[in-house]
Length: 117
Image (tube, rainbow, N blue to C red; front, side, top):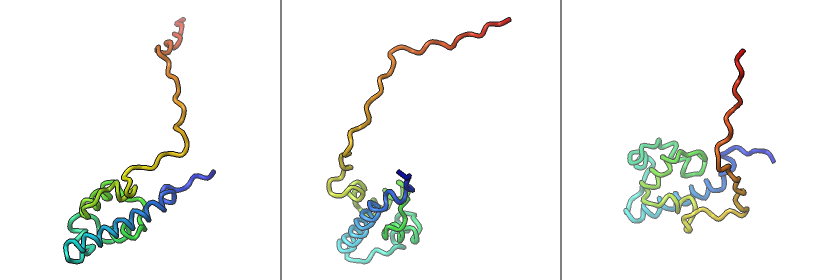
């Protein structure tokens, strides 16, 4: 199996998270009774307006955790809900966890000493 680039592995969830962020932005605009511009978000988060646009459109898949949490805070939403949905936790893995490896209870023997001539 070929190894996928990190950004392509998370493409679907990034699109879903971006959709949730856009929806939350619209909800907040209704609550506040005014439009929230990218410049408003930029002033509040410190994230460049161009980057914000890409994040909200799902076109910037490798967003730093700090920027993601800052944006969620500015939009007054739970980052876990944005990323995982209403369940707010990661889905259970379908495959079992790897078997644990038994560790020795005693330290390994010291390496053999070299004899001097």
